[in-house]
Length: 359
Image 1 (cartoon, rainbow, N blue to C red):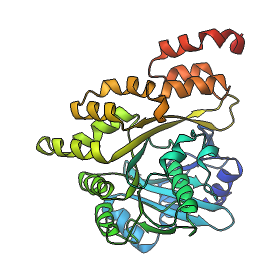
Image 2: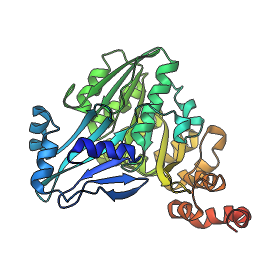
Image 3: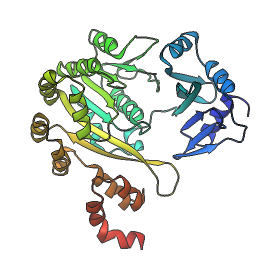
Image 4: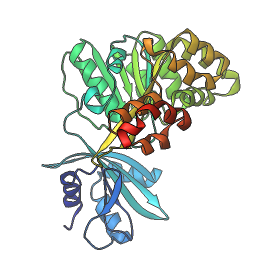
């Protein structure tokens, strides 16, 4: 293998999720969470730069040199579609590529609970999907859009950086706008989207105050807005959205979120028990009267308890999900305990079946 197309093909054939081009290392493929080197010599700084620059358009090259970072999409004939990120590391250009599935998986195929489909039936408000980088947020958003598009007649506008999954028109018209190619910023595109007769607006990430403010306003005025945040759970998502704003504006955004926010879906990907693939562990917080009261008082430490008693409204905690995944033998008990919010309580909950499952 001697070029990036071969390496991307190898990543797909080996069921890898990512390809990394790093100076002084061979290309690396992430397979089920682990990095594996390809059997070729380490890449020099000149080689990595030549390879990466060769994949970009002139506009993208100019943007990379201006901002020193670049998100972009890459279509490779007979291989597939990738999301790329070019960046500098100690003065050398490097890159990471994420393989995008050819077909948008359903929410059930991803491992989400049926209630997420119920949330997609909402006609207005803000739904957030949160998690760390690489936790599958974009794929969950895509599956939600696909579900809505096939069941509702309307206009769906997505604002993405970059466009990952390509949607076909179904019952809905889907308009996909890419940062840089179709619009200059999330906030501008979001404001303009309100004039384009949307029913559903997807924003790939709420990155700044202006984008968040506009998204909340859109959700308040009769649109369903779906987006992501880089936070690990519902409580931290609320805190993050509020803290983006100056202190004098925080009472206003709290009031708006109490009115507009419908739910927060937090997720992470864990290694499967058999060592093949990864499994989604999630939690869902739904905005009810009790959660709104907690939001207004900013007593976010109460949220896990409210999710535990809100099962009839579709809520579940991460620990409840981890417990179910262990009982279904999809993940190991040790893996569940690593990620549990309350490892002691989780272990106690599983104690009656622990001997049966693990000997």
